[in-house]
Structures are given as structure tokens and as C-alpha cells.
Length: 161
Image (cartoon, rainbow, N blue to C red; front, side, top):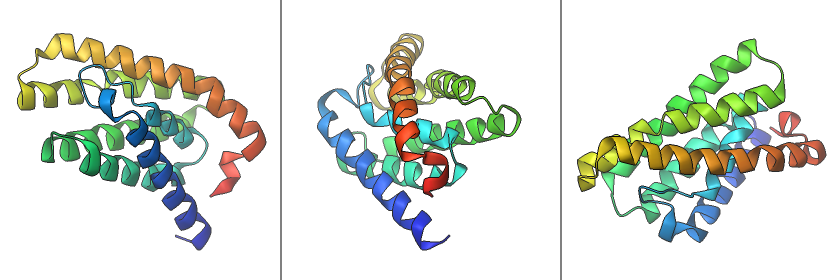
């Protein structure tokens, strides 16, 4: 990994942590409006963002989640699995808008992992929790599509790392 990629991923992880800290009171419940999830869309532009996103999720969960090891394991697993699925789709789909939509659905659908964690850790009902986490993840990721795309027009995320 070259220095530019390393620094860019470190900054991405720090931004993920900072935004997560801002929404901590409502970013770790069964309705998770974690605005930092918008950064997950960067994987559409370059797979090298994987490490920055994963590190950001890991550290944010470590510092801010009251569920401890549960959130470290399940939260990181959710993000890494979703990112890998989007990377695979990206090999076949080159349209950025379609890939951003797929990424939104992948992350939202995979909230079953978080719902299962919340069932184990807090005894919340799985199906209801999956629905609420799906909806909240979908809203945040959907809002992020035009924001990230507009930023990409100026910043060029595909060549930044």
C-alpha cells in the first residue's frame, strides 16, 4: 500500500469516527441513523477504500458502542461482507448510479447481521429489528447517493487513493 492510499484511508477512518461520534445517541440502537454509513459508498469508486471504511467501523464501534465485543464482531462483519459484495458487483457493473443503488440495497439487506446481534445482546425481536435497521440504513444510504456523487464530481474519488 503506497503512502497516498495509507493516508487517504486513515483520513477516511477518522472522518467515519468523527461523524459517528456526532450521532452516537441514535447510531447504535434498533433505529440506526448512523450518518457515517454514507462513506460506504466510496467503495463504488475504488476498492482501496475498503481498509479505511473497515478501520473506521471497527474504531467507532470500539469507542462508542455500548455493546462491546458484539458490535466489534457483528458490526465489522456486516460492513466487510457488504463491501466485498459491492466490490464483486463492481466487477460486472460499471454504471456508478446503478452500483450506488446496489450498494444501498446490499448494506440495507445485510442489516440482518445487526438485527441478529441486537437479538443476542439485548433480546430485541429479530424480524422487527431487521425491518427497522433495514429502513434506517436504507434512508441514510439513499440520502448519501446524491451527496457522494456530487462530491465525486469535484474530488474524483476514483483517483484519490
